[in-house]
Image 1 (cartoon, rainbow, N blue to C red):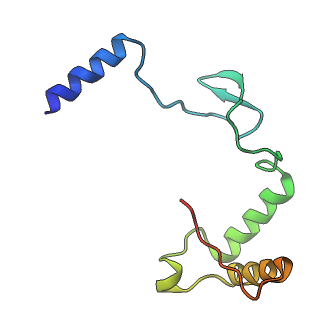
Image 2: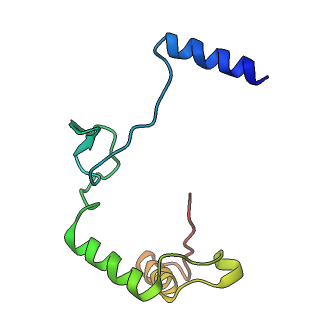
Length: 106
């Protein structure tokens, strides 16, 4: 079985079809650096250019200092942070619904 996979990989490589993950060496932006070369990033989903906004970076750092960088467990097991709860309440009020629920999409 493994030898069959190795053969298929070899064929893909010969055909120039083997995909290799690139390592980005710069922050996400409209221009990125990969292997020391600058590229225009056509595939970014940072449509509003907020990934490197100074205020958002500062706020994220404040959040990490206050809450840490991990939840420890899922919301149903460990509860969720007060910031999540406050955001759910604000989203419910904004949308006119009695409640809102945050969930991660992975």
